[in-house]
Length: 276
Image (cartoon, rainbow, N blue to C red):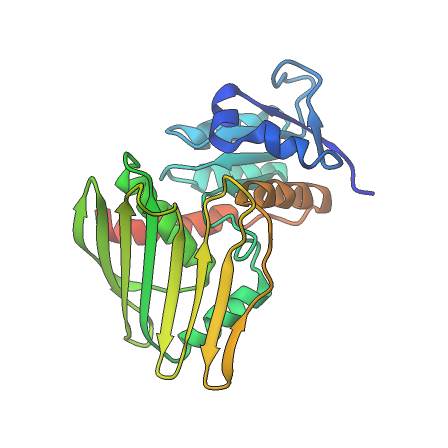
């Protein structure tokens, strides 16, 4: 049986990632830290960090205090290199709990989903992707989460260009390695559920993934259409929050390094083409 890890989340981290609810749903994996907060002489195994400005510094401080892992909820764009170095030196795991990129359908290099998307990319004629978030969402944050989905799906984008950006959303144009066009749209609206979808069209079919909001364990949909027919992968009723915490437990107990910071760095590189 895998060991139970102690965890601590301050109020901001709890609000950002519903930590208490997630931990309660994984009672064999996590339990509350005995102290009222992380102390240097008895640090919790895992510390939850809210992803607002300064999260990389707070995560590095948690690692230096002795935490074996850090879970960051909804991280904003920041340079992750110093944190990655600190985590590597300490042998600590850093897992990013992102709205859609953390979904079980694509997180942790889900083989089936990546095979479906990758198979379509080989013959792609168009990539279309839309992310919908509630009004008031910061467009730059939505774009970061959107690009994280693209990276997590194993999609390479080139020549990114911002076509339009406003408080209500954005439109980004790009191209795939084979020269096919790609379009990304961000929409702030309460008329649609907060979802992200990625659709790859080919000359004779399509492949796509629809990722739900992580507030509940609604399943993602991964579907491929070819000349032989349509295939929908089995539904995974698991929220992105629970998936992220389950991955954190796995990385910490197995010692296998997490790749979240590297994936986030790749998304930020794409973002830099649009904001630099």
